[in-house]
Length: 567
Image (cartoon, rainbow, N blue to C red):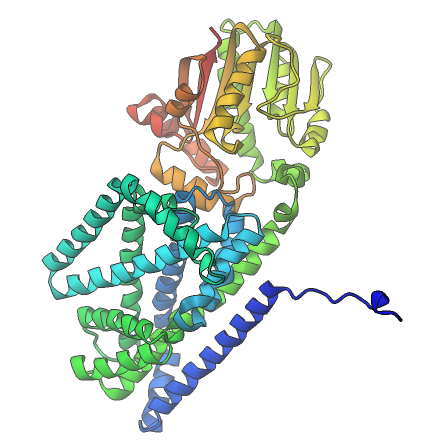
């Protein structure tokens, strides 16, 4: 065999090597933590340790609050990560963001939490955003952790000192944001030099504009509040652990010792605080609060391994759950094509029927106030999905042209074809229709899937092009004016269902008026009950929903419809 015939060597996958090294480091760190705790406990009476261990096992239900707090904080950390990505204009789908984040969660066992950076690489590998912005979100979160711990320690010392420190931190961030036009250009030049260094280039933000966005009040303050709340909650785990070990805890003292121990462990790059942090908590529970040696050791160990162990277990479980649930969509070129065979199964039938009736009834009332039918009108259904709305509108109109970007959806919709309807594959912002060729058009939950405001504006212009003079366009959208509902649609709904993925660009009614030259003549707000409300409850609470739709609170409904007229 000649040299040219020799089999080519397979290139080394650096990502896999990096992952293997991190996993080995994590396992070694965990074992080192166990060995350290066994070593420091060698002089304590074994009989007393066994007695307390049996007491803890016998009262295992008391461990549930510890696990609940740790789980709540872990969820809060993910929400912070995803929120920071959104603040950096990285519109990663929620499933992608979950996979990336929980891929790095077990890496808290690496010294200095350096292994968490794998989340940024996974995010980039899944097409969810740049490594720079993933790293920026991770580092920003850790900076907020440190600030939150200092604020809480100040509050433990004196309340007014903590409030003053929090005010100073927020004020400095606001000052940095307001002065960003003065320093972003110079910082960009520094970033360009740093990105030439092989290792540091992964840690440097993409631009100074990213840093400015992270200092904006709408990003900095919510992130800091989540961090403060999370660290206070997790510090209560030590309080509960002391109680579980059979001693009356000092709430403020235990919380303070936990926070001080966390900083102590971070200072020594202790993996997940195992070893240094546990040792600090143990000795200071004894010296500062007078907790018995055995109780203090068991409380410190229980706290550290509850928090760390649950973090690792939930991280792996969430990773595999999300991966198994979303793997088809993550690999699909068009996730709506991937969903086409079970699109209507994502929501309960009674929910779909209720929305179908309420939305079509509103449009038909505008098109046909007398209820006599509109056989002379031609309409366009933009983003028809599986064709339910087009079939209902075709019963009352002369002709319906329904279109969708996903060919799988179009095939499903064609099964509902009527003699006066046609279905084709097309998507905004380009429609295969002649100028001024339809009397009306509607788009139901379509515009929030368009990638940016410029594309949304061009889509409105395209709709206006195909409408006849005086023609009507009905836009139906999710109403995210209510911040709680916006949070639900952005962080919870994409986990429960796959119709939305958490990367949507929501439109409020005010946004619509800014994006289109058509005149908005009517706005209707309807439905307050979430889609998971049981059918019996929806029937029973219908009177309350109807009252809310007529009250001043109607702007906070779940859905809205605007009627726009081409002038």
